[in-house]
Length: 204
Image 1 (spheres, rainbow, N blue to C red):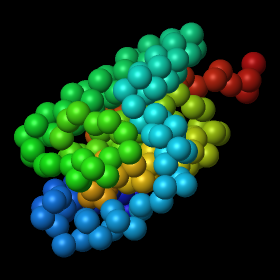
Image 2 (cartoon, one colour):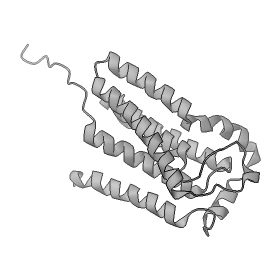
Image 3 (cartoon, rainbow, N blue to C red):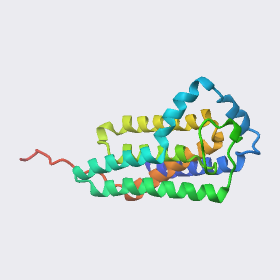
Image 4 (cartoon, rainbow, N blue to C red):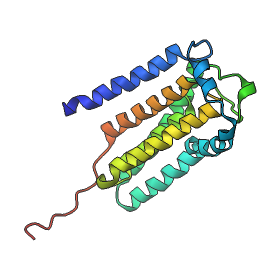
């Protein structure tokens, strides 16, 4: 049963990305109505601040800090993998934006300046891929579950901020979350390594 968890998770995440692409966007029956529900002017100042949890500068700084700590602990491969996940996810998201060419919501409603295309949400994908990678690669096994929960919380907060700021369709955000999670889990599964075991005192 445990062997099925990873492939099932990957299929599910891929299905979410595909569904978000096919049913969302300006012509969607659902996206405009859901986005309208996130119009909440009192939350805009907080959203403008918290949206930086998923921007390139924040994620790069966090990844460099985590990679530096991993290097100090002797986990060179994990440090490299963490930086590869961050860089490759960013490049793939930009490639998908250009490939799918989805327009953003009405610019008159934007609460922050944006300059590229909509699908998938880069901030949502960055936050999911980056914080999840840090949780999986740069925390001890004892802290991994709470770290993953915290990473998911940061990613979800980032995505919801993009909706409050009216700069993404809900399916852009869902697609970004799903892609970021799938890409990180795939690379960690393929290339991640467990930290060296501590020497045992038995028989000493």
